Length: 201
Ligand code: GAR
Image (cartoon, rainbow, N blue to C red):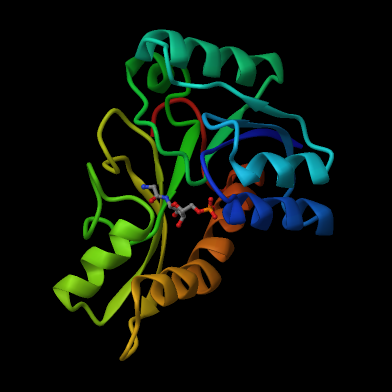
């Protein structure tokens, strides 16, 4: 079983999709630890309810280097092989990225390269998509590198924008029709060796 660590900051619906898949036994991976940078993140409750180790590493009051060192320490303590960023908001720098090079993936709620990069996270992504008037949006799973949403793309899924959508209705549709399907699929592909993790791409 591929040992996976999930990084979260918020509600954790993507984490829930992974927990549900492990519950059904169709992920091929084990969620060894969930780490949040926010003590109040509901995602931590979801992890505990599934009897998965849940820890908080706060960013507040730490240098970026110290924050990343502690994140790596928590993940290494559980011998994590694949890191999944599931709504994790802090940008990660060299210390973390070089440690988990090609072993960390992220889900982003748009079709990269649209509506991504600095400042594009959560509901803001859907606000931007609606403001631009696109008719199709979606979600992307990509490897994490030093840039903001710039790593190699693994999976994408398109979702229709509908007349009368609000950022909230669009966010929900992108989650239901794309994110909650794509993220478990990416982990499944990594666990089965069809996506190569670690080493050079
Ligand atoms: C998800 O829509 C995820 O794609 C997005 O934050 C949300 C977290 O929801 N991530 C980003 O915007 C990263 N740039 P969740 O906590 O319910 O999974």
